[in-house]
Picture 1: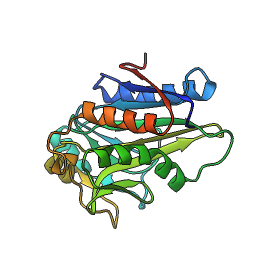
Picture 2: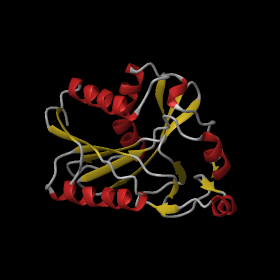
Picture 3: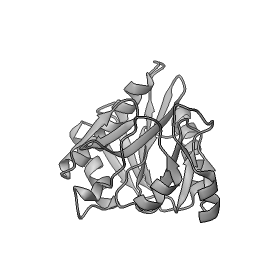
Picture 4: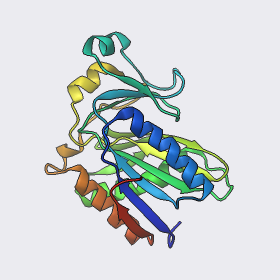
Length: 219
């Protein structure tokens, strides 16, 4: 909510299990009121991250290829399919208060992603929200999102392909029907890096009226 204090964190851990556990911990702390609304950025070492249950609506992964390539597979607490993480992928998470009101999934994805989209546009990337849960640029997917919510707290988190190994991603991930091909953000912004994206998102949030407080760790 504009006018409120908003914490922005950029965690340094690259451990997928620790980072996903941190998502659940922060959700509980925001829901309890221990922490204000916050935005978290984080990067995992190479792995596949899957939703809680397999569904024909979402993409999955080539399990045989993952075994042959020695790719770690970890589970997140949100729904959806499987995404590829490496150190060229920046993960972003918005933990927001809902004040007891139900937020539809599409509205939740739109609400959170608009700040990332605004930042990307400022960096020269033609980003746009593509319902229900993608950010696209020039008809190609650069970010996928997943969410969870309670009556009072909403988590929307997503990937952002900055300079990811798309050859390995495409060898591992099986996209859902209708999903466009993926691209890296550096196709439009050659000198992009995670720090520039974090600063750009912070600027967009401040311009939206939030009182932003930067920190390097979530503790």
